Length: 458
Ligand SMILES: *Cc1c(COP(=O)(O)O)cnc(C)c1O
Image 1 (spheres, rainbow, N blue to C red):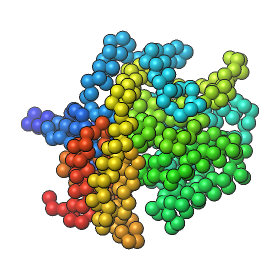
Image 2 (image 1 turned 180 degrees about the vertical axis):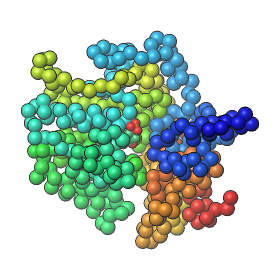
Image 3 (image 1 turned 90 degrees about the horizontal axis):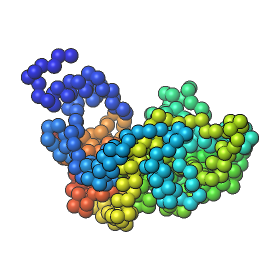
Image 4 (image 1 turned 90 degrees about the vertical axis):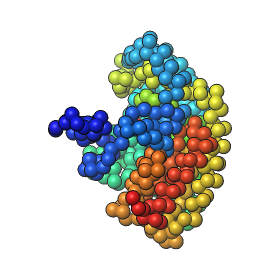
């Protein structure tokens, strides 16, 4: 690759990026023909690219960011810890921030969760929950309980165990031959169920009951994205469904795993989505917002009961033989503690609930637009499903790239987000001010109208 000295700094970065970086969830053929966005810095809810253009971070840098970018308190938590030690292992020893964060997590998560197992991504957190659930039953001598239940269109991350309990055909089908099979219950997708929310919920619960009645003896656990299924298109569960699923699993002696990677830390208006229905899972996975979106830390929380099944004499070999090099990273745990302190200092949960109402009111302006099928929202987690025909709910063709075109238009108007197929996602940092939310929703709505109604003129 020739890098001429007449290139601008931007052109030089693009040339190297295209020559050497393989981007995740990105068709590189499209990417290499586009005009790539290269972020240089962030400040509050804004991101700035190397050409000096400013953008609202309308998807919290893929659902992570909580307090905005470059927040002095969070930066200081990292640099203070950096002056002590950047990393030391949790294998057979401990560090101060990991201990303090574990205490805090146990305090704020649903009742019954008392043990914290760290890792470094949502997917690894899920992988750990799946392996813990499996080995839990092995350690108890119930060796027939080896299978899992998941929900249709579920997403739990991209490692092989997490993909095995995933059910999004586009992402997962190609790997099917290398995965372990899971039971799949329908996700209650009210908008696309002929009997609406009630019918969808009944279908889910009756299918779950059927599987449990016939097969609970061979099932270790059920894994669920509580209240909001994220990657499938921000689909909100009918009320009571989560609670009833958890109760059914308990009744049939199947562990209940809550994957709160997307929904955790205030995103849905409660600290955790499980809190909406007072559900206490046996295992819970957190990631994304845990560090305020600053550093890669995830955690799998377990109950005393799960933990006890592993607690034995050394010779019994009931140890959980799992760990990652960066498990319990002190820098990440330190910034997570600072982030959680900010939640309290700034009364973030109250603020999220209030701001969610503001966004809901604003978005009403497009609810009758001819291609807005459904606006789904829980807290500051919003998905707008676009349809070709509103009356028949006919979906756009894949090749029309409707979501991609809308988010492309939003970028031109100064806001970043990523679509999920024909669903446009809006997940602003929780700390966004009213004025910022006002500006972001304006861009979001204009982008949708421009693309779905206007076509658009460059
Ligand atoms: C993002 C996500 C994951 C995966 O987390 P990574 O940190 O990307 O591995 C798992 N579960 C849910 C619900 C998610 O949204």
